[in-house]
Image: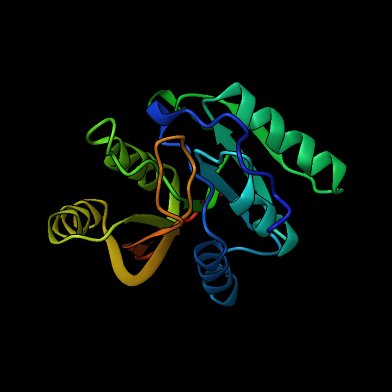
Length: 200
């Protein structure tokens, strides 16, 4: 996953950052060991950026749908996948207007934190909960966000697990002066009980 390129021209209004390797690895291995990504699983990444999470999911055997609003990002992701022999579906779309007919087993996502556009993190989460039984999602760690997500999980009939991790942010925009900035994030694992059943 380290080979997945960062965005050469990140757009601050979209809060474009590459997911740090430690977070991506923790999310993916946890999901894989629980059989929530891997063979015979169709996985979606909402706001895939240049494709780091989906690349990991594909390497672990999943079929993956990469969803992104930014043309440049999804082009880079598609190019990287093609150059490295990875297969995935790519969809240029606004998550807020997303309509998917195919059943998604698991959503993996590192959505915008809502620093620039307040509430966009919850918009991504709601859409993920609408389309998949299981959601792995990363959010800034604070009490208010945790209470909001736990309440939302209850409304969608989901159990909630939370793992708090370090997010190491390296300089990504011209005004970033620190070599690296470390803050806490929460990885939420939200599961429907019981899972939906589909007709054969």
